[in-house]
Length: 150
Length: 81
Image (tube, rainbow over all chains, first blue to last red; front, side):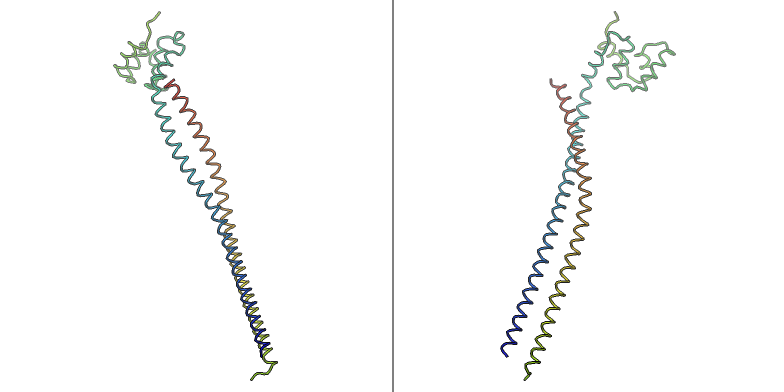
């Protein structure tokens, strides 16, 4: 009776050992797979966050750039007035000046030039007559910006 | 009392049952692992594609940020020489 009991005991132990090693193998493999998935997901999350940060940074810097460009109006006026000013006629200088100040658009500039011939007036008066600039600006340009004719 | 032959026959039957239990458990675990592996592979493949796209977008954004930085520095130098 002892021998069959020993054989039974050995069978049970071997079965339990096999059962345990199969379960352990399954747990290890599943945890490895989960770790791999988590690693890829972490990388993806990092890139999503990085993209959001960069977009926010870009938006902020573009706002700053726009502000800087707007604040460059003064120097732009200077640059425009310096730009081949001796070679241009007075009308051209006023045209360049108003364009550089952003007071008139290119389309309005062309419209003024066409109307100048019809109205027989200079550029500044024509743009004033057409309502593209106000009289205050016109006076200022006449006083400060336009150099006397040689 | 059972005779010796019957006891050994019972032992053999118990042995078969135990082997069947181990085989079933092994099959079940292999199946679970296979399903999980396929799931992880699918997710990884999908995420890797998205990661590649995101990396390109991030690189493009970095270049744009650098360009804007350069322009800002240039303008700031003009304002405060």
